[in-house]
Length: 267
Image 1 (cartoon, helix red, strand yellow):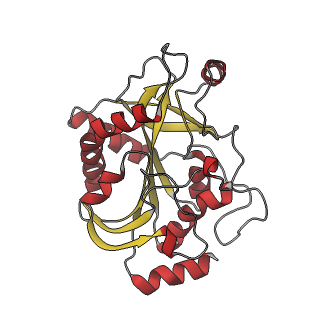
Image 2 (tube, helix red, strand yellow):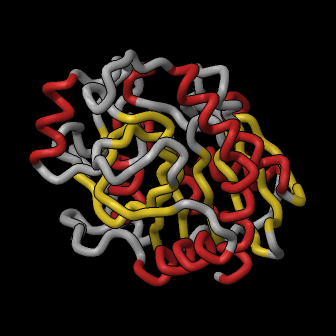
């Protein structure tokens, strides 16, 4: 199936991206900053998982940001939409086969560490995958990577440092920490947040980790940025809503676009 999907994309564009960027909830406006060469909707690709959320457009945008050749995933799919881990990571494998050697993942996350504030960006320096099934379960695709990929230092230190330096240069609030993916779609309970805190999680969300595992399997360079859109359940005595997530992302989208653009310029 991957080969057929590659052939379809190549029938539309011969653009070869070097860097992939996966846009999380609320970050879709970043795609507007691309000097566009081609746009392909996920729904146009046979056998491709399609985003079901209104704030995930579900398309690839190929082109240039800061003169770098990029492929933007404007929206992703999630386990809670009913997709398997293998379906969720299919876009990452496709991007690898299209030529991407580096991938920057973004997401909206709930802050667990009390040093994090709503509106902070957090560089992901490690993750915990124990709460979701690995996308590598089943027969290994030898053409993509080894049966047992190493998970030490998954997040590229050089790229992470560039993100941090760029944020400081433009006075963008940024920290670093460990991210955990849960399945969702429900937000976590206070007891679950206490558990996550106890095992060393700084932030939690419903995406990214399984995609990172697939990218590592493909031997791609990886960086991750979370936007802390809310404080996790139990940190504040108030309910969590998806509207809060969208509102925080909307307030920080210009800063994020600047952070991404200037980081890409330095890569």
